Length: 288
View (cartoon, rainbow, N blue to C red):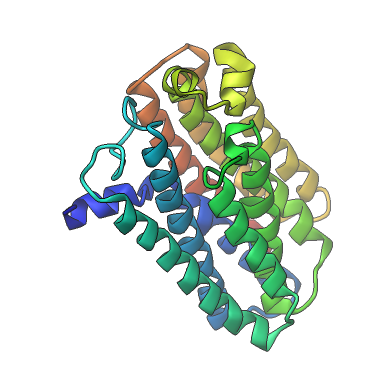
């Protein structure tokens, strides 16, 4: 039986900025363009966190039963390291998805029922990332899914459930958020290129190769701040997010210098820190 700390580690807490930042930024847009509804923002955050953890457990289960995680450099996986039975990890994944669905149902009931379709698509995307007979995460499509669901859908959806409308800023602000979420996945997959190649898992990092993936990470980080400048043309306070670029220097430098293996775990943590600082400043700028 896995211990509580092992379950917490298996939930991959370093990835949680992917779910927290989009909701914060969407709420910042809601403040700047109308009146936020705080309880709806809190429920949206709960949905986002549950989906993120559910995806992480689903990925742990699917990769674990395929043997993809048996020889890896990154943090412990519950199934791959055999500390938890696959059925328990699968149950945890679907438990998170079910709770996310219930919370999403509440938001749909007070806004619009078409949100149920969006929620169903998010759950399906979470499962089929590495689940099913033809997982799209094994076909170099993971970054696209992350950009859509942890960028566009999460930011725009959070704004919508509070304003019941969609100002242009919600769409534009979602782009840099999605790019930084992609950067998190890119560095994770960069670390795993050797083991993924050996197991036949064709992530975008495997397709691009080591050098191309390092340039992709750098491009995602740089493009995020270019997007902020674009938003600042009409919403000048959004430029408050620009100082967060200082926290992009260290991880980008490490990636471009060619660090590998365990050193990329530290880059993953630095990327999460960048997301949080960026998200806090960008949220404040959009709200003002």
